Length: 384
Image (tube, rainbow, N blue to C red; front, side):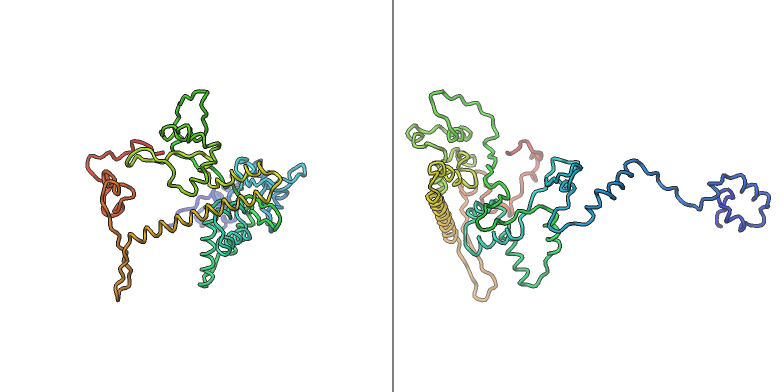
């Protein structure tokens, strides 16, 4: 049975349809006893009151915010990129005015991305040289080459690309343009940042007499726990960058300290560990030959060529060593090519406990220690 409707909760429009069992006097009393604003309501919700912040929001949307409603092609639609109250144009890439610490980082433009691919793949330039020429990190250059190669492969296969989405992103975010011929390129990012080395995290108090010279080479040996260089060897090193040519062309010349799994290379100075150590020598050549630009460029090109040649020879030797240790077996009517490599289980190849990271079978068939009974399953130390 449907619930009864209370007389004082209905409006005057429903009173004629109430059953005749109710007297007219009751209905008249009910209609006259209720307030007028309740009797006129048609079961509606009272609108929320306009607060001060809401009024300011709608006022801003109708004045300054109206210019941001439609995007201008070729410009970022940032609030901070518009003219302020004084009429000055602010071109700072800060999309959030309330967070002044957040800055929108730029991305590579389509022209710069294609130029990177052309120089690396078609012109056969090294990734290191292209990184210095265009001011893009070597890891990003490698990623761009893989991405463009994937896009070209998809076009060849007839697969669609999300080009409208890419255009929208390029217009909403600042981009690094490709410099025209004769112009100085705009560096997209820092390309020579020094990576943090775990050995430099320790605080060491190492007393040195005032009569002894102590530079970054000596500091690296202290952090590594290596003995100090002999005087005749240290006297040949006038600047830490003197070690760059020898180490870059022959990385095996770096000294090792420790034994077994605790063996590690001696920490080299920052002039050697940066991604582009040749730029240090380039700057030194510019100071030594201020008016001989052609000589500076030639010396820099020769260093790059020697470094690339040394890296190519190392890759060829490593590939030949791998091919020599692998035996290829191809069945006559088989679909697969088997590669068989002999595994030598010694202390040097698998470690003292047989679980060295370079040991064969590390990922196959060897359970982790946390599966054993009685083993501590919580970390007891933090590896830097």
